[in-house]
Image 1 (cartoon, rainbow, N blue to C red):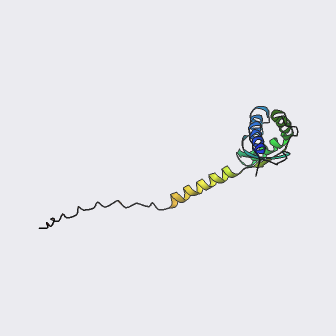
Image 2: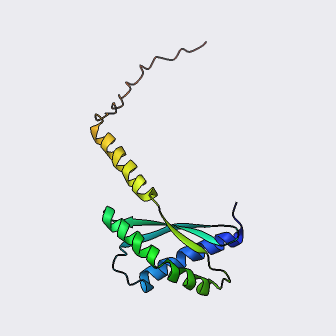
Length: 138
């Protein structure tokens, strides 16, 4: 269970690191990187930042290497921007949920394409009921 303070710092961490990657990190190895979330410990000393990288295996590895190389800069800059006394140690982890979701979507489409087309029977128009003469009671 996370505290309100943890959730605030997590949101701020995602926001600030995203901005740093877009504006401050000039390493060409950082490819198309998306920050998907963050977890921070109760004492705010350790943070796990989940990222998703689009590209092949080498592009992913190069992006991780570039981010790990600039983690010291990001740690200090985040502490300054968030006005924290102690900067959390940042660890970048791969978030494979997007890739996993895309794989499931592809499998569902493949199953849909392979399945025989199920036709729904057309509703048969009901014949009008024969009208019987009403019996009159006398």
